[in-house]
Structure formats: C-alpha cells, structure tokens
Length: 202
Image (cartoon, rainbow, N blue to C red):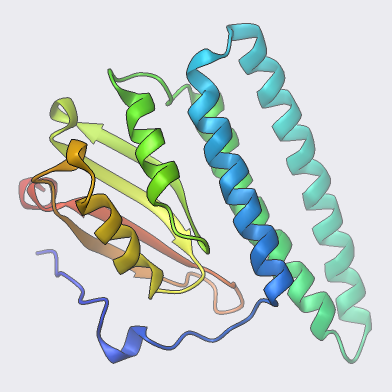
C-alpha cells in the first residue's frame, strides 16, 4: 500500500544547506539548459541527435574526470570545505546530465503524441533548485510518473501547485511515492511523483 506524504510536515521544512549560493545558481542554470535541450528534441534530425548524444557523453566524461581529480585533492587537505562544495556541485550536474544522456540514447523522447507539450509544461513549472530527470505518460496521457531531484523538499509543493494550474493537466492529482536522499553526502533529494489514478492501479 502506497502512503501519501504531507510535504508541509515540519520534518520537511528544514534541509541542511550544503551548497553555496553560486553553486545553487550554476545548478539551476544546468537544469534550465537541460529542459531547453529536451524541448527542442522534436526538431532535431537523426544525425543531429547522434551528434548531440556524442557531445553530451563527451562532456559527461570530462566532468567525471574533473570530479575524480577534485575528490583526490579534497582527500589530501585537512580543510576541504570549498572542495567538498565543488564535489557536490559536480555530482548534481552529473546526475542531471546522466539522465539526459540516458533519455536521448534510449529514444524515450518523442514517442507519444503531444510529448513536446509536456516538456513545455515542465519548463514553465519547474522551480529553481529542482529538476525532472525522467517522466512517463500512460493511457493516452491520463496517468503520469515523474522522477527527479531537488535541493529542498520545500520546493515540491510549489512544483505540484504549478502543475495543478495547467489546463492540460486538469483533473490529474499527484502524490509522492518516494522521496529520499540516497547518499547522506549528496546535496539533493531524489523523488518520484505519480498521479493518484496510477498509484491506485498499482
């Protein structure tokens, strides 16, 4: 039995701030660019998609190399607060990029009618400090599953409120199936949202 989570409970009101303001802005920028890239997918040719995937994978590999180098440097220093923040920032960026590369490589985008409309909705409603990593639409758009990450649990109610204001999603209500920080050293929380109808069907 799935249990709904009240995101306004006190336990979700305070999250430990692990990122500096600059890092927060940089991560938000990555999310915005990622959404723009996804939204423009429908206009790409097959050759363009292949080149884009190759470019993203190359950038992803470069960030992994950078993350490994910074992690080694952090281990050699007694005081590594700044390096620790840099590692966390890169981890957040890598997580977002990894999902985008996965979506493009597996051809998940553009399968359903009106898919670009969902991307446009998310680009309007995603709150700074959170991102959508993957979403699935079932039964002709009647049910939806959304996965992503957020720097603070307090941002999810704002995102859900934004979705409820979308005419295209009228009548669709969401509940939180999962919300957890997989690694205590991570700067973000992973979440899974589902329409109530889909949850009941499961």
